[in-house]
Structure formats: structure tokens, C-alpha cells
Image (cartoon, rainbow over all chains, first blue to last red; front, side, top):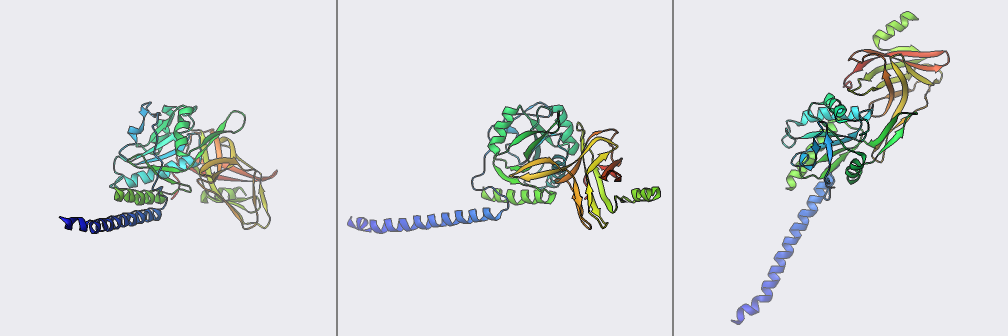
Length: 215
Length: 140
């Protein structure tokens, strides 16, 4: 009866060794994963921002909420239809990337491009629909009242501001980054300009592969 | 001179303003609902004196302005440029996502391949007029 008692210290020591070994393996794995993440260009990891609940309207005046983002990959781009340079330039590149990625296993048919207008005073749903679908019939245009837009963009670190251009016109300064949102609503990358289709496709491929391997 | 201009227009290259050359110009077709277009071009000074481009205008738009899309802190900002100084053997490139000629208020339909007239003023009596096609997509 004394024997088990005498063996307890050994048992505890053995257990501690196993725990320490396990913790070491876990830490090594975590360190390795974090190291891997650092190797993925543009990946916001391990604490990517999460998209907060949104109350936007799409180009058919239908509610655009988190349900429209959940379960699929999304490229999000901010702009306005009276933007002559960076917006059409980026949307044209996104259209090419979207077509390239449609056959990609992880992007697939569900992957989407969403254009968020930060100029709701001029960009009605009707105008947005004609605008985004000029670039690609799959594209979705969304907007909202300024207060709701600010709630949404603040969470993403996006700023927008009207800038007068002459007496009765204005432009809007806005983020030129392309936000990549994963199916779990995590903002896993912000692709900064200058943009190219190859960069967008490659960034998606590398980041989505990493995210999938992390599951 | 007229023959020279016509030949240059056909070849897509025009020379005037004592050495100013406009090449590879094109105008992005405004999407539906937009009356703003951007023109892109490369300007080169092949002359021997510095050129000062002080104004840009278009017979096919109500206004034309030289703009630049600036990127800082993740923000895109469009700003007006006063003019262009081109030293001999130097060039100025207007490209998507950067410097561009902002055209507003078209005075004719902007179908694909329609030719747009854009004039660069190098001084009170000197200008270069270039003709640039409307394109739906950027040339690859």
C-alpha cells in the first residue's frame, strides 16, 4: 500500500515532463504558425479586425448586413461614382481578378466584390447599380446614410471626407485600399495601391491558403 | 503644317510647342451616370528648351484640369496641379491611379473609340492638340 504513495513524486514529475513537453510543442507550433503568418505578405494576423454589424443598402435597395458577408470571401472597396481615376481603375482590376478567381477553389462562385459608396448624397441605389455593373455584372454596390457609413468605416479604419472642387462641386477623399474579408468576417488583409490584378489574385491565393490551413 | 498635324494624328503622335510630343493617349470612358472622365498620356520634350505647359483644354468637354491622385496614410486624395514644366529630354506620364487629366461635362457621346481632342497650351501663342481614343478598359 505504501508503494503507490512512494511513487507519487515520480508520477507527478513524469506528468510535469509530459505537460512541459506538450506545452513546448504547442508553443513551438504557435511560434511556427506566427512565423508562417509573418511570411504571408499583407496578412493581418493573429488578431485581424472583425467586421461589426452593418446596416447598408445594396444597389437594389435591399438590406446589406453581415449575412451577405458570412461564409464567403469578399473584396471590399470604397469610393464614389464621380471619382474619375482611382475608382474606375481599381474596379477594372477587381473585375479581372474576380473573373480569374471564379475558378479558384476557395473563392469560387460565392466570392464577391462589394463597392461601398462614400457619397450617398449623389450615389442612389439606381446610380450605383448601373455603375458597378458596368465593370462586372456580379459586382454589388452598397451605401447608407453618412452616419451609418461612418459607423461602418470607423471599425475598418477607413476615413472619407468631402473636399470642395469649385463653387458647387466636391470630390471625396477616401481609402484606396482593397479590404479582403474572409468567410468568418475577419479583415485579413488591406491591399494598398498601386493595385494590379496579379497582386490581388496572388494576395488572395496566399492568404486564403494560410487561413484554410489554420482551421 | 496642316499635313504634318494630320499625319501625326493618324499615327497617334503629335509634335508642336517647340518639341512637345504627346504619345499613347487615351480617355477612360465614363461609367453610366458619371460625367467625369480621365485622360492618360505621355508628354515628352524632345526640344532644346524647357517647356511650360500652363493650360489644358478640350473641345469635347466643358472643362479639363490636370489632377493627381495622391496616396498617403491609406487615403486617396485628388489634387489640382498648376502646370507642367518639362526640361529638354524629360517626360511626364499621366497613368491610371496617379496623374491624370480630369475631363468634365462631355459635349458629345463618348462611345468606345470616339476621338477626343485635348489641347496643351505652352504659352499664349503656342499649343499642341492631341487626339485620344475613348477606351472602356486600360490598354494592357
